[in-house]
Each structure stands twice: as C-alpha cells, then as structure tokens.
Image (spheres, rainbow, N blue to C red):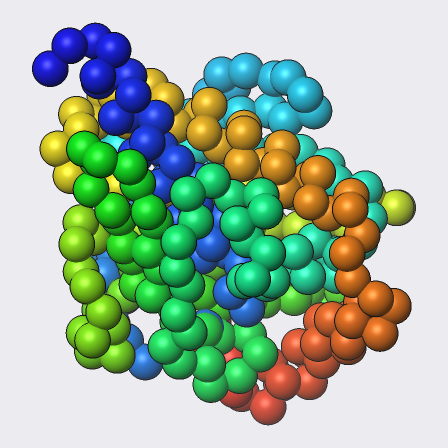
Length: 257
C-alpha cells in the first residue's frame, strides 16, 4: 500500500474515531463492560504529554502500555453553559452538521436520563470499511452543579444483535468533562478509541490528534449557533439539577473512573 493510500485511509478511519468519540458522549445510558482496568487512563494521569496548542485547543497524548492505540486528551473552552453544550451533544438529528461521516445512531436502552446505550455506525467511503460500536454512556453531576462528566465505553449487548456488526470499534473508557467557569465551559475530553480494522496502529496514532482537533472545533462552532429555544435550555438545566436527587435515591451507580 502506497503512502498516499495509507494517508487517505487513515484519515477516513480517524473520521470514525472522531464520530465515535463525540457520538458516544452525545448520549445521556444492562450489559457487561468490555474493558478492564488495564484499558483505562484518567484525565490527571502523569503520563499525559502536551503535543500541540492551537485554535484554543491543547492536545495531549497519554500512555497505556497494554494497548497499542494512544489515548488523546483535549482541553478547550466553549462560550456558554453546560446546558448549551449538552443540547448539542444530545441532538442526534443534527450530529451530521458537525461530525464528519456520521451515519447512524440507534438508542438501544435508556433506563433513565443519566444512563443510555447506543448502537453507532460510521459511514466510510470505499475502500475503508464502515465502523460500528455499542457504547454505554453514564452522566454524573457534581453537588454544586458546576461540573458534569460523561463517561462512555464499549459494552456487549444482545440488543445490538439485530444490527450489522461490520468492523466493530473498541471504545475504551473515555470521558467528556464540562466545568462551568463564569460564562464559559471548560472542556476536558479524553478520547481512547481503537477503530480496529487493517490500518496500522502507528498510522491511527499519528493522525488521531488532527481528527480530535477538527471534531472539537466543529463542536464549538455548533454550540455558537444557539439553535435551541429558551424552554429547551431550561429543560436541560432541570435535568442537570435533578441529578443529585436521582443519585441520592440510589438509582445511579458509582461514576466510571
């Protein structure tokens, strides 16, 4: 395979990485987790190394020796509120406006507002194969309502058996942390996804940071469009505020690490 073909296919696969990462965060999600503690890294892990900082987005690479795919952490700010960002993430019909190659998202299970499982499919042009993932996403909110964290990871769910498996991407524990600071939201996104397939891992790792920057820049632009009504924003705020009472009722398990 020539260098140009490698570059083209890698970019197509990395479109899948960006889609799967942000689409799984877009849910607000019972199956056995497919990852183990060795597949995880936290946002404050000492192994993070700053790779670049541009356009208001700082990108870091991490290290998990047991996994050949390199996790990426992105830090950025978005003008607005947590509710504003959450509305964009949750809006499935408009995901194609800001996520390249987005194809399909099917809700498999939603026992409550803070726990959801989705089947995701990314449409990639030939010769790259489409990617799919089955992701469980859980939301936690701090007591002071200043921080909301979305944690997603691959799961094995029989509810997805009726959909094509294709090339099944592996979503290791990834998080999207939003902290309200004045009139801006500080975002720390941890993306740890193996798109699988035939593309060499070093190619995937080389281009992942570029894909993460592009996707997050598009997210920031989508939030700035202010597409949602005052009543929709108020409803999202009520859901955020309702987390504490829901958690105290024992309906929400421990946050994912």
